[in-house]
Image 1 (tube, one colour):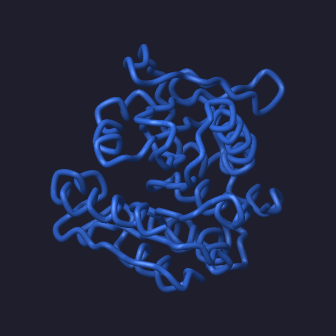
Image 2 (cartoon, helix red, strand yellow; image 1 turned 90 degrees about the vertical axis):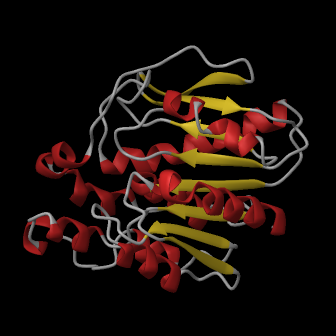
Image 3 (spheres, helix red, strand yellow; image 1 turned 90 degrees about the horizontal axis):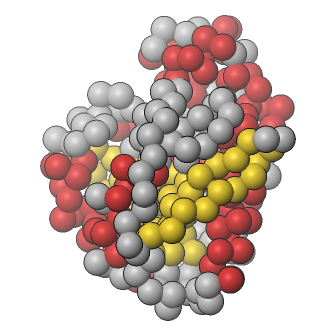
Length: 260
C-alpha cells in the first residue's frame, strides 16, 4: 500500500481544481447490472456498478477516466460481456452518485476499500474465476496502486491511456517541479509499476494529445512484468481509441484475460 503522505503533494488546490472534473450524473442500472455503495470515510461513499455476464467468468475492476461516471459504461460494458468478461466499475468522490470531494490522496486511498468491497461482492455471488484490474487515464493511478499492493489476488493489470510521471505531466501543463514539490520524477505510476510483476497490458493512442504516447510507452518499459504487451492504436487520441480501433482494443483485452 502506498504511503498516503506521498500523494498529499498533489493535493494542492491548484492541481486538484485543474485535474478533477466531477460530474454528478447517475442512472438506473440496466437489467444485467447492479449498483453498490462502498463507504470510504466519515459520511463519504463511492458508488460502483457491476455488469454481470456469468459468475463463472473472469471479472475486471475498472477505474474510469476523468469527467466520466459509472453510468457512462452502460454503453461500453456490453462489449466486455460479449467477450466473456464481467465488468465492475468504480466512481470517485464527487462523481456520479458518490459523495465527498475528490483529490489525489483520497482517490488512491479509496481504491483499497473499493477493492475489498469488490472481492466481497464476488464472494457473496459465488464468482470463482480470476480478477483483473484496469485503469483508464486518471484511473491508472488507482489500478497500479492495487496491482502493486495485492499481487496474489489479482491476475493481471490493464492500463489504458495512462500516465507515468505526474511531474512530467504537470510540467507540460505549466506547473514547475519546484511548485509540485515532488523529488521523484517517476512518481507515482512509473515508480510503482516497476514492482508490478503480474501480466500487464498497456493500451495507448499514438496521437494522444492529452497524455502523450510516450507516457504509455514508459509505463510499458518500466513494468516489472515478464509477460507484458503494448497495444498502440494508430491515429488514436485520448478519447477516440474505441472509434479508431475498437476491434483491436477488445481483441487485445479478450486475449489478455484468456491467456491469464
